[in-house]
Length: 103
Image (cartoon, rainbow, N blue to C red; front, top):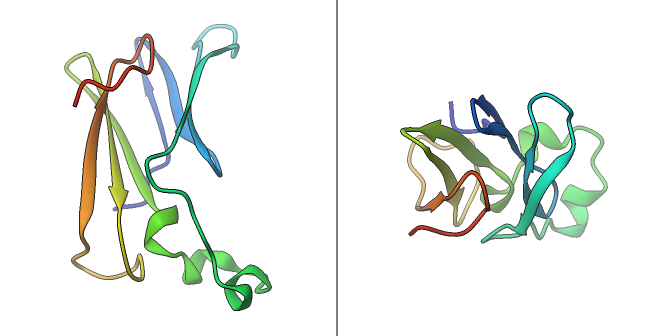
């Protein structure tokens, strides 16, 4: 599965919205931090006018968010259609308490 845009960990709830990566407090739901995504979606006019965008997702709008060993990992696909078996991607590691990029 390559389109996991929400994960829950002991340090918070982490998700990707239309333009940013967001961290929420697990107990209160309050926002802890918000940073811009590395790659933002740029749907074509045709894709923007279609009612069911799930099957027309461009790669730059598909992400995987995972928490492991005290780090938040975000996989950003970089090009082409998202529903292919192999796609170029960038892996980003973030500090879950601040949103600071680790690498």
